[in-house]
Picture (cartoon, rainbow, N blue to C red):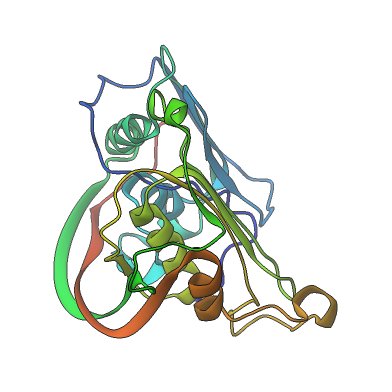
Length: 259
């Protein structure tokens, strides 16, 4: 299983569940995608889910917040090779976490997805305050109060081979920030800052991917991801921490009935 961040990924953060799930999407369409393209996307808007050319494994990872590929195992081989287009619309705009719960229901109903979860204690990166006075960095800002009414949480990592990643977030929790950093490091990052609420941030750093071909123009003078997190956000990533990591396996799944 390769460790590169998929180039076609539209990455959206998962926030803690705070509302009860609805009965499901008002309209939902699932169709096989046979274009043979490699790019794919999964995007949540205010009232809908739209996935293009996505595998079932990617849909599960998005709906359940499984940010690292090696955290999802099992299932028939087609869950990582067959591609699907999914278009689902809710009756009204809903918080993002509620749409994700509805997406889980959709996967259970249309693909027969059954998951098993296991928790293991292992070494993780702990994200902690870097300064003794509790101050954060210049590129981390409290989100405006208005975003809490119907928060549009999202993070947007922009990277490709040889380019410099830019990781930005709006109205996001620091748990979500840690989850995004986990993708770049391909290792679990756990938020231990103790800071509640929602935040806006921008983070620029040299590409840490072992598959990246360095670009002098794109990465000149950029810090490592560890230095960037400390200098720009005011946090430090400490490797020798212990934390509980959740692993998920696909116990059952079947090809969907299309419509």
